[in-house]
Each structure stands twice: as structure tokens, then as C-alpha cells.
Length: 114
Image (tube, rainbow, N blue to C red; front, side):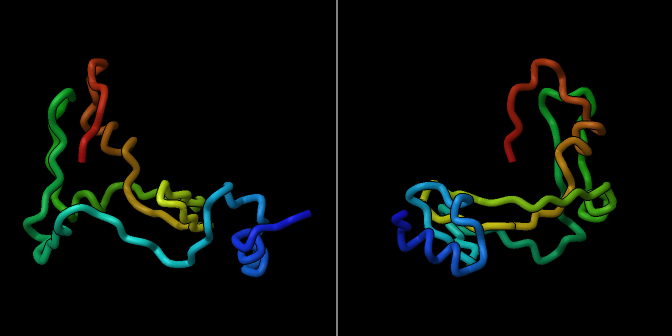
């Protein structure tokens, strides 16, 4: 069976080529694509997260309070629309469900914007 160059690279890296969607190529890097400047926070003592709008309880957490909430982690493949894939990517942090438990979104809430 014919294998594309991308599939051969995936196999050479020790992965199952079937994990790579058609038209994608494997990367070990973490490509960073953004529009505009990247926010920098030099003083996490003054940083806050505010949850408001269609919620029963508006919420404002300091970095310390947010960091004290239960954390979750998962490992997943990332397939970007710009045609790169990164396998076994580890993510860790506070899951939205922890914030939802504290702020109680109203039934009319449709979106969360960060």
C-alpha cells in the first residue's frame, strides 16, 4: 500500500499512521499562532479572573484562589486547521466545571468568552 511522506514520518516516530488525518503533517513543536500582542502578567498578586453575566453568582478569583481549585489533566491529539498535528499533548488546569459549580450559569447562558 502507498504511504505518503507524512505517514512514513509518523511511523518512523513510533506512532500508528492511522492517527494522522489526511492532509496533516506531524510536528513535535507547539506552533504558536495569534493575532496581536500576547498579554504578559508580571505580578500575579494583582491578577484576577472575573466570571459575570448570565450566572447566579458573579465570581472574582485571585491567582492564588484559582490555583487552589481542583485540577484535571488529559492527553489528546491536536489537529490544527493549518494542517499540523501534535500527538499525545498534555493539558492540565482548572476545568470549567469547577468554575460553573461556583458561579452557577443560568439556563439562558449560551456562551463563555475568555
